Length: 386
Image (cartoon, rainbow, N blue to C red; front, side, top):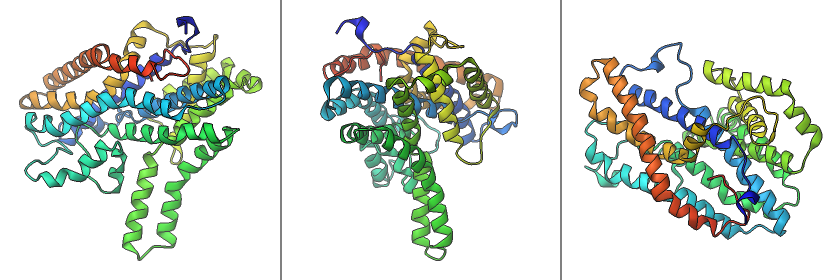
């Protein structure tokens, strides 16, 4: 396939970069808080700290891109090659995921002296067994069921969510003639499950402590199991792929674009959230933002910026490596924490610059080998490095 025939959505890498950088900045402050160092989270003016919305943006982006490619594959080949899909996902996700897991379990606990949250305890090796198991099986989001998480690797839980989504998503396209129905069911059903768990716990299992604990853990699991946000990306891909002109005309309008930009970035900056379904609210905004960024030639704002495109290209590495690097430099500069200004300048500069350098070399000298191999299993060619 010629380069010009490849599918490429402009501005997507720019949005991916924004998501990754938000997570990086948020986790610096969260890491400081976890060890009692003065941090911005202690101040009321600082609303956006966790980078959680950056993760949601990744979810919606992934759902949009993966779904569009599956729509295209089914239309052009009249089938879905499940095995090739799994091979592509494994070659993109697994190499640096497992590299990070190995470093976090078997290298960094012996390098970093301070006792950070979730640090593996090698004085009692068997205490790490369940944690090692869920991370190596790529189900780290099972920490919701009382299994210890991995310090420096809590962001990998969202990769587990994505992998679990990828496990069944191509089957949806293979089985259902009209994919819209399962997409809508997922969007509606998943956010209701935590509330259903609470309801059952309160009204039916008041005195059954075992059942109450399980329902609480199950609710926590689905609270962060944001495959409905990925399905929201799939919905916007369905609208665009099927050229739903009346809907596209509305979503492409300058009024809707302005409202979405204001609500998305204004709400993100000021830390606005709803008491219920806040993630779903932002996922809808992200989906409309992605649609306009990727497919609307008259988009009000372009994220197709050279520097952002570069950061978007290496963003998977930024996402995977950043917390390891933050912990390392927190340890290096720990004796300077009494001088908070010097400590923060050094921590931010070294954490950000090293994360970008490591991610650059990881992409161009390690990940690229697997991406080239991934191309051999691509049914529909794309320039998006997903």
